[in-house]
Length: 474
Image (cartoon, rainbow, N blue to C red; front, side, top):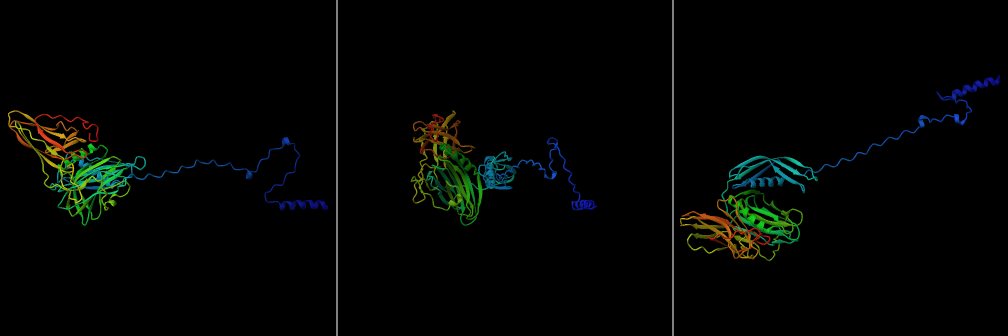
């Protein structure tokens, strides 16, 4: 009895002690190993499969910096009779000055065409397409710029003084600063002639204008050629382009704020590169205006150097100020049937230097001389007269003249022959004609002077290419 009562009681207590839902263990049974089932791990203890990693996302490349900025509008003020080439160049310069271009980018301006010259009083309003190519280093930029061009009707002018900057001619590596400085008053327009070669290292050259005490407006007519290592080409092309622009009075107007320098860059010269520029400058209002030729082989603002002293010279004395008042012409007269005139010397001017320590002007560089050819044919037959040159030896010379009424200068290649007359230009003389043919002549940078100019009825020899035997002037 007692055992029977105790057993149910134990079973009841065991059931009460078991957690809710727990299963009582089944009685163990004997089984052979082969028959034993493989144990199945509890789902709660089974390892979860590892997630497959997704490929790492590549970081987005940083956006390229813009190659520049397309200005919304530019206002360009010109004077004289301006050619399409000149207008296009001024439009490009005005846009480039505001484009904030990154180094190595390319600027393309398109969409503006002109059918002919713009006369004094004309205006032009147009929309220019502007593209700044980043060339892979910067983001390309494209846009439109509103362009306004006005051409002032101003009386022509001739300078009364020559600013001559050719010293040092070969600018040494250490020479950073002012190559020449002069002051232009409103009643004394000036011509600036500069001729410089980079020696040893690359360097920049610029013209810097500065209104000293009050706002000023200046007019500039001229030409610059280079940088280029072909000195004869640079010298003759500068003269040729300047003579055309001078005849047209083709010029740009610039407004200067007081004490704010204005830079006219002339480019980066590599070693042995030449830059030559000839500019006529007039102060229209305000003044005086200081003009400086500045150079540096180092990066930085060139205008910051404009206030320093002039650099030391190279002992050649090719720096100074000279008068351009009452320059005598080159006059020749030929009458068929009479004796031919003796030739006259050109390029041997000896104008005194207005600087007390300066040497006289050599080579007549920067001086524009009138050429007056009086030709008469009293016979009943057609005749031909010839203008010729004869060099004095040395390194040879080119000849450049702009005859009145011509659109382009007459260019004679370099010749180095003191014995034979060489042809400059021929003139057909109708029976009974008596006329004066006029031209403007300037000596060319990189040529050697003096030379002789004369008139003859005997055909002179033509100048063959390469007559200077491969010298820089050829």
